[in-house]
Image (tube, one colour):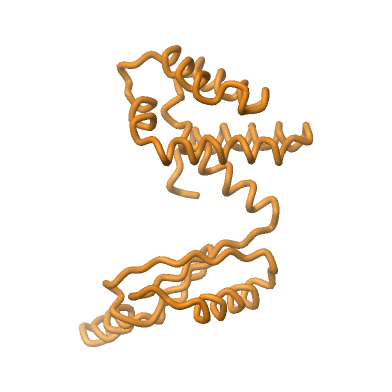
Length: 180
């Protein structure tokens, strides 16, 4: 969660609680997914929202035209608040962070498997089972990432737990032991 601004965290926490208390959490999650995907697929819109020379009223009107009645009144109120507080620039952070809050609320554990080459389905399935075993959670999501710089092996990141069984990691350990 550290990649998001403190302001985004405050807005998401308040919005999440409002949605939860109103029994509209699934609706809010759908709205945030729509906003997140729209911003992800439209770099021009992201750039537009981050421009300090463009007024927040203009930004809000553009967002309102894009999403209109596709979002709930609760989310529309959040967008109005962001416009009033000159914070439309953090909308992307809010949408991304909301997803993290929502997954945590649902008890979903997210893990990232980094390998030097794309692993096959059998390997992915085995690591997915390992993540379930390590966390004790059935709701585990395993994402894969390819990084040729690790040379071989793998790095498995589950929250704060990092298992580095990569060749690069092993070489770095050998190097640090030789320097001492």
